[in-house]
Length: 429
Length: 147
Image 1 (spheres, chains in turn brown, orange):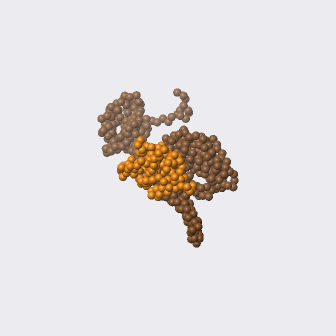
Image 2 (cartoon, chains in turn brown, blue):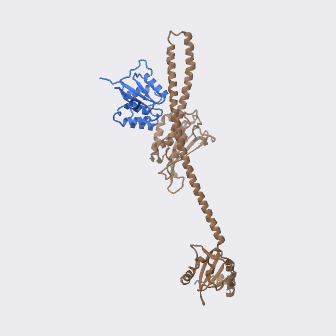
Image 3 (cartoon, chains in turn yellow, purple):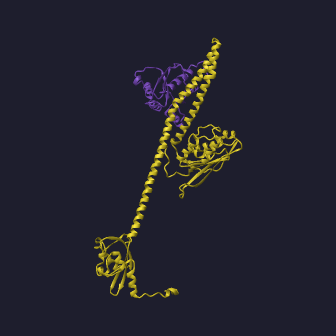
């Protein structure tokens, strides 16, 4: 044995009679039995815990302190421990040990038992602590935990349900928009067709009026009516009809963005952007702008849908450049950690940056809503493009946002998955 | 060469649309008889000589102008039914529609329509369509027809 440090080498020696006193006043119940399971020691703590005076239980079998249902099996358990190899053991590590008080009431208990070979035979000592309070706290904690888990579960179900409802609502809306715009096309065809007919009839009427046989006092007011009244009226009708027609077509495109079936696959984004930029050459030249395209990682999505997104955002960037300075549009992309943040979860973020007119902070929140037009004079449109972009990306499992400084430029960022997502794709309506 | 008479069957539920189509046919130089029916079922009945048209006798060949959105049987249904029956599969069909939905166009061509025209139908569209169909049999150009 290694030599002990000086301080510990001179232990305070407690006299044996003092030891009995210490045991007696201990807060825990200390009960000793012999091999006949008769109680031979019952301290004050035990008296307090069990409600017996020592005189009442000394010499009685230890089973008096157990609920009746545990009594028959107990002697064998005691014998097992007495003859077993363990010197001490914590009882009930896997189950609740129950004590029985003098008044018959029961309480949960923490029990440690130990074995001591004595000159009078083997003595078994149990140190018992009333665990009622601890048990109460534990139970309360467990209950709270369960309640919390239950609430989380209920809330999760609710959210999933609401999500589903929203998805269905979206589909319903799109179906509604689709059928309404389809139905609107029909009367519109009449307006368009018959205003064209009217215009044709007016031209023919003018020819009829050109006949020499018509007196000049009839021809002149009639021609005036036609040229200054009817032609103008028909012109307004036709302008309005054209506008209405464009709006309905835009609505149809939006509903189509939500309904068209996607064929998910690896998309060569660089190739897609090359095509988009190629198709925009005329606009680019008109706007005296340059388009810089950096390396773009491939993504997982529907090629046509991805192309639509880029066409829209790059087209917008060109349309809303500042005529006062050389326009520049930069397209970039990079792969980064996904939103879930889990290992292996990756997503691509693409950006379309321009040095154009920019968007004031007040307008940014409305940017992706339908029929919102910030610079109606810069380019024709129905205010539907960004709503369509957002809907497409939503279905592809991506997101879109914009950063902008008025008079400096705008950058659109959007994400696309790099691989098939486990989350179900939002289905077409 | 003996030329068979060509008759135009116009299936269109909207009176205005039917009127516009007829005006433009006339303007495009057609003097052919035009029969108008109001839905897909009537169109099928007419082609097959069934229902209200039972016992219809004619030696004229048919050209079908078919609106897509119609009550009872829509234009797609009529096209499908005609093209799947060998007795009527040869009838040339021009689809009339209010949308240029690429998938709808694609579907009509897959089902075997000859020409697809988006409304409102213009005189020039008809001339183009008929040129593509190669059916100048009964077109008589109105001398002063304007483009």
